[in-house]
Amino acid sequence: MINRRSFITGIKGTKLNNNEIKFLKKFKPWGVILFSRNLKDIYQIQNLTKNIRKVFKDKNYPIMIDQEGGRVNRLDKLISFDTLTSEYFGKLFTNNRKNFNLIFKIFIDTNSFLLSKLGININTVPVLDLRYKGCSNIIGDRSFSNSAKIVSQIGDICNKNFKINSIGTVIKHIPGHGLAKVDSHHFTPTVNKTLKYLKNNDFQAFKKRFIF
Image (tube, rainbow, N blue to C red; front, side, top):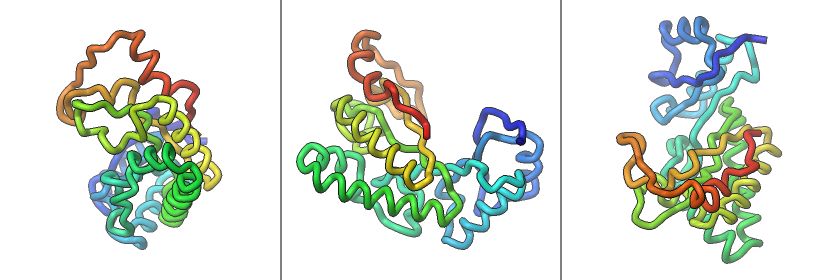
């Protein structure tokens, strides 16, 4: 068993360079996360994930991706999920549970099949942040609902179906993020809500959720 450090890292391009290989061997990160800049076509991605695992001599080494659907679709060069936002699935869950169960399962099965073929074994979903009017659109339609109960229920279904397909998941982002007035990629948000409010609302969606 390799003694890995408790951090994940990204890489610069569509293949590992010598400095990155040296870095991975020396610091042994827990995993590697891929972004759009790393993904060109099926064979290139397969070669990339294969070469990452060669560094660690571990066929199960964690390789991650943000593949939510909607505007966060790292595989957009391969397939379009533009209309399949979390907001869409949240509304479908509320209005037509039967259709939701069918379409959401197909969505997850399709993503899982692609990820498995590409050598990616962890998807950083589901988004469990609540959606609030008047707040930063960094969450926006990436949230299933403004209801903690609905977000929690869909989150469980998401985790369960990816697990069935042997794809790990990572819940995100952090309780209260939906209340942020600014994009946290660029500024540090301040949330002016009491701990009691957060416990009764945003925290509820994250309670008893696990990484599979």
